[in-house]
Structure formats: structure tokens, C-alpha cells
Amino acid sequence: MAALLPHVSVTVRGLRQLWIFASSRRKPSNCFILREMTTSCGVMNKNTRDPNVSSLRKHSISSKDAASPVRRVSIEGNIAVGKSTFAKLLQSASPDWEVMTEPVSEWQNIEGKTSKERDSSPHATVSNLLQMMYQDPQRWSYTFQTYSCMTRLRTQLQPPPARLLNSKALPVQVYERSIYSDRYIFALNMFELGCINATEWMVYQDWHSLLVEQFGHQVELEGIIYLRASPQKCMERLKLRGRPEEKGVQLDYLEGLHEQHEKWLVEKSTEIHFKKLKNIPVLQLDANMEFKSDPEAREEFITKVKNFFSAL
Ligand SMILES: Nc1ncnc2c1ncn2[C@@H]1O[C@H](COP(=O)(O)OP(=O)(O)OP(=O)(O)O)[C@@H](O)[C@H]1O
Ligand SMILES: Nc1nc(=O)c2ncn([C@H]3C[C@H](O)[C@@H](CO)O3)c2[nH]1
Picture 1 (cartoon, rainbow, N blue to C red):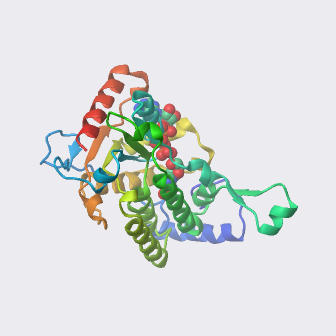
Picture 2 (picture 1 turned 120 degrees about the vertical axis):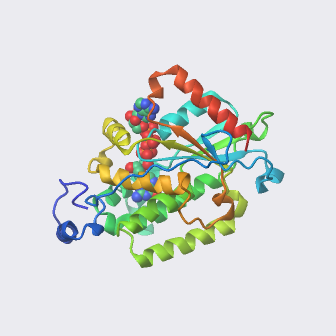
Picture 3 (picture 1 turned 90 degrees about the horizontal axis):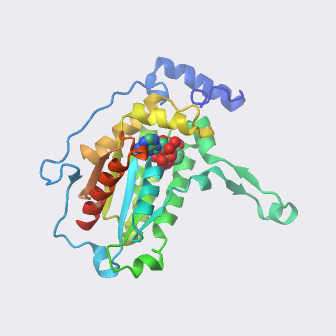
């Protein structure tokens, strides 16, 4: 949308978007970049021993237990909060942990070739769906969510490496985000902002539920690590990283996503449709900490993660 990337050239679609952009200034519910959002900080579940961990299922037996010893955990958090950085830290901390990165490069490089073109031209047309979504969210958000969810599903369906299956310790496969944040953070947010319409939202939820139900325990998670930082801190890091597609992202978009994380993982007020996910243990870590330059902070994080994993 023009509001996201102000330098985008004005096409017919662009003119329509500019009109929507202009009307959204009068009716602020239409465009997420202009929406005024307030952040809210929730409280942790009072029934837990460790204040960082909510909903610990100490004695429950997961459906994974019988099939595989590998536990599956996702890292969740706002844009640029530091998930990839934290994931690298985990990867280097234990050979029994395997990190699966978010498939961002797949979203940035979609090869579009018809079967005819494939025969006649050696060069594929490559589209950057991430950029298209940020430039024109009303047009591309639904398409983006179908593709992001499909690529995440593919990641979650990958079998653990032999190293983990043969591990004598506690093997854990760690995903950077999941098919659940796809729905309960991003798609929901886009729907609430009016970038996904009511019909698209119904369709998305219908196929999402079908996939989760059909794949069953293959796509279940045993735990979630929530990297929590202020939207302002995420904005600083987003600017520092300088990913070109994110140039137009504004603070109120990050505030909206922060609110969705809080509702899902802290306040537990998001309506969740899968039984196991409703009671999933959540480890909350303060990601405002500049752990990159602080070995003690890194050590503290790793200890918390180890304790969390061993309780799953
Ligand atoms: N704890 C930290 N302290 C200081 N800088 C950090 C920290 N974590 C991440 N950064 C920096 O912030 C920027 C964004 O981090 P990173 O790419 O890990 O975020 P991300 O959560 O994976 O982003 P995305 O949501 O886009 O996948 C990077 O430049 C990284 O070096
Ligand atoms: N709209 C939308 N839906 C998603 O499911 C989603 N997952 C990630 N992202 C954006 C955030 C970063 O810019 C970049 C890398 O995380 O991709 C998403 N955007």
C-alpha cells in the first residue's frame, strides 16, 4: 500500500490504493499503517512455579511421546525482535537442538513459469511476494498468508535429522515461527486491519483447520518460546537490519502485532481452535536485553531454555 512504501510508482491500482489510503484517514479502520493502536501488557499465569513459564503440563503425556523422542518448539515474537539471532544462539548451544529457520527467502523468490515458458526460456520470472504484500497489503495479504502457511507447513513436516533421532539426551526441533502464528498473529491481524476481507478470512480459517486436523500430531508443538520486547525496540532493530521490503513498516503496525502476541501468549484471550495449543507451555524471555554483546545474559537465556525443554 502507498502508505507502507511512499516511493512506489502510481499505477491504476496505486491510484485505487491512494484513494483507499485517503479514505482511511477519515475512517481509520481501513489502513493498518494509519491505525492508532495501544499496546497492553498482560500478566503471566499465576499457577506456575517459574514466572517465565506458563501452563506447564508436568505429568501429561503428549501424543508425540509414543512415536518419537523429539520435542518440537516454536520461537515466536514480533518482527525484528531477534528470533533469528536467538535461533543461532540455540543452534550453537547444543548438538541435540536443531533450528529450522523461517522460509523468508522462499517468499522473496517465487519462480513463476508456465510449462511453455519453461521449455522456451532459461530465465524464470521471479516475484517477491513479501515486497508485494508490504506494497499493497489489501491486494496481496490473503495470497501471502496462503503461501507463508504452506511453506511453514512444509518446514514443520520435515523429519528430524538422524542426529536428533539417535540422541541420548533430550532432542528438540526448534522452529522460527509456526503455522499457528501464521493464523493467530499475522492473518488475524490482517483481517482486523481490513487487509483480508471476511470471505478470505473464512476461507483461510477453513483450510487452516482442515490441514491442522488432517496432519494431526505431525504438526503439533510441545512448547513455545516467546521473545518479548517493546515495539519501539523492535522498530530500532528493524531499522538497524535494513531489509529493503520493510522500509515502509511503521511503529503502529509493530504495536498491532505486539498486541496480538500478548493476547495469544500472555493474556490467553485469543480464541484458539486446537485443544493441545490451548494449554501449550510458554516460556517468556525478555528480548529487550542486548544479549548479543553480553555473555552472562546469553548464559541465563540458555539455562532458562534448558529447564523449559526438560519440563516438556
Ligand atoms: N538481543 C539483541 N540485542 C541486540 N541486537 C539484536 C538482538 N537480537 C537481534 N538483534 C539485532 O536486531 C536485528 C533483527 O534481528 P533478527 O533478524 O534476529 O530478528 P527476527 O526476529 O529474526 O526478525 P524477523 O521477524 O524479520 O524474522 C538484527 O540486526 C540483529 O543483529
Ligand atoms: N503479513 C505477514 N504474514 C505472515 O505470516 C508473516 N510472517 C512473517 N512476516 C514478515 C515479517 C517480516 O517482515 C518478514 C520476516 O519475518 O516477514 C509476515 N507477514
